Image (cartoon, rainbow, N blue to C red; front, side, top):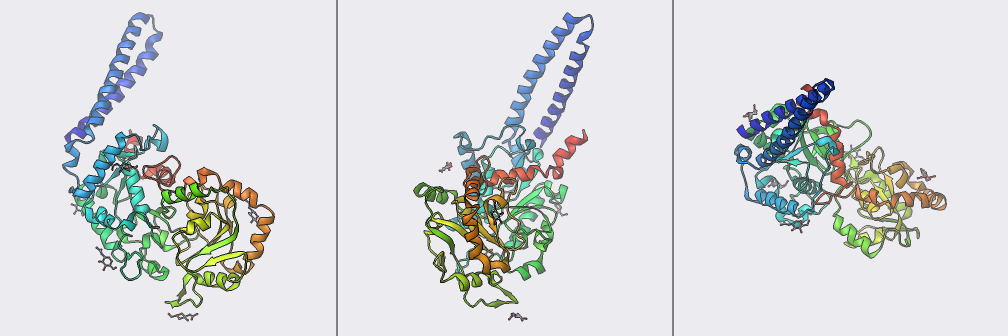
Length: 458
Ligand SMILES: *[C@@H]1O[C@H](CO)[C@@H](O)[C@H](O)[C@H]1NC(C)=O
Ligand SMILES: *[C@@H]1O[C@H](CO)[C@@H](O)[C@H](O)[C@H]1NC(C)=O
Ligand SMILES: *[C@@H]1O[C@H](CO)[C@@H](O)[C@H](O)[C@H]1NC(C)=O
Ligand SMILES: *[C@@H]1O[C@H](CO)[C@@H](O)[C@H](O)[C@H]1NC(C)=O
Ligand SMILES: *[C@@H]1O[C@H](CO)[C@@H](O)[C@H](O)[C@H]1NC(C)=O
């Protein structure tokens, strides 16, 4: 703590020297030019060497024990993560963020006991299933240059809690019943250990909520709505897969809509075998749950019966390749398809959005009011088709019409590698990828940064 203070003092002295320097140049118009010139050179030399000296101090003070002494208890697995990140940062693999990008934003990543995150990784699915952005964003941040080890210089505080990795032994889906209490307990932990949560009441703290109804932490919309966003999170910033254009209790919080997680390695492996621009012999594709007689689950039907309707109307249509059962090699089918149907499930979003775009199959989005991720990086209107939920009967006609008119221009837009990259979470972060887009979105919320507010006040 003492060292941190000293650094702050040194920095403000650096500011003073710069002011003197400016003053010096202005007064060099007077007759005593020679003296001023020498004086100016001296100050320049002093301030440059001071700059290097102080930046040396600042860099050196980062991993110092003064910070970690007050830091959260050190559990072995997250120590391992940090060491791994340090090792890898020297191998030049991580993202070097040029100064000025993201407005110089810094993110502090809390070091939490392993029960909040790394313990879950013992199940391999934890880091690769569709909700795994909570893991990938954490890992990406650990290795990136926006990360600071000094919480005093942070604009944002990332709280790495993995809540979607408790897989049910019955159906294999993540059970998120424990999510609220796990997050509440993590917040209790960080607010007791360090002063930053209390300082902002969480306003500069960032969480990931990557399952169906995001920060409502329930798979059924009516329960999700009734529960709402947990009280403790309402001040914070949530990175969530759920997003709709209308007002909804599950996005009644500062948030960024993020894509679901698809492992970038699998996409690259598929594209290596069959490039996105290759031949596509399947006209329209869908593989997934399509209930013939959907159950009434507390007044709601899966996919609002849209998938049932698709199956009923097009199940026997030769142009449509519809399958109701899981198949691990389904990416090879997407890369062979021209149109990929992305109807809602329980929630409006689905992993098919990312898989279709990444593999160059035109997404046909059927989910009324859906808010799609990263609209500034992904020109959704130019790379996809949107169909109203009650317009499924016209699906065949609409696809034929597009195939006969503007399909080539849609595909040209879609096959832009930058578009694909924006929806994939890489570790380490790659320029323009999904975690990069998250950082870009956070840098537009710097009005929440305590540090930036202080700097503005100076
Ligand atoms: C560093 O990252 C690479 C891939 O990015 C990974 O294969 C390797 O295991 C990491 N190194 C360590 C020491 O964990
Ligand atoms: C995992 O989920 C189950 C079912 O929701 C719950 O009973 C259990 O407590 C959870 N496990 C942990 C470690 O939170
Ligand atoms: C933050 O506030 C809580 C509740 O008022 C308190 O228990 C905790 O000790 C505070 N944390 C710090 C670091 O002062
Ligand atoms: C579905 O079930 C609810 C009760 O949970 C009932 O009120 C509603 O009428 C049912 N809807 C249909 C279409 O059967
Ligand atoms: C292609 O045509 C369809 C149907 O006419 C239209 O809805 C869509 O906006 C067009 N897309 C592009 C990128 O031109």
